[in-house]
Length: 124
Image (tube, rainbow, N blue to C red; front, side, top):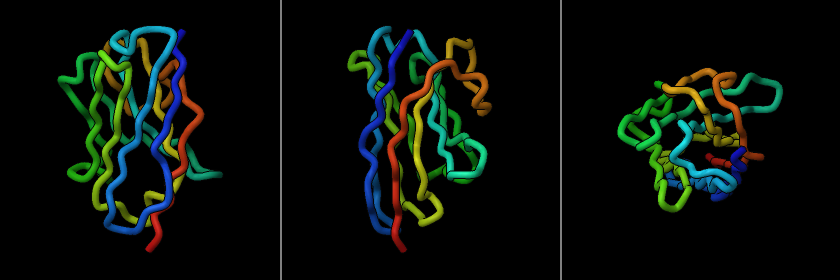
């Protein structure tokens, strides 16, 4: 199975940019569809973005479309989430996830492996 470790979270101001990374080990990242989710304590996990195995297709939640970009470097076994024009409501913990499925999904139950999360705080 694959192990996922997120990094890059932190404290930024509204309007700033931040790039999250998710490093995979144990199995080649190219075997998996990759997604980013976020979860506010007490609420359901929210889909943010996903990408196909080769990165050729990407999918976004409406709330982040045009501001966030998911990308992957299979040679480095890493997937990224570039977040621009951050808003305070983006404050939460971000998780990367890997799926053995054939197509990306916005449903968290479609993903088989999860990282431990990295917190992002956007101050107003």
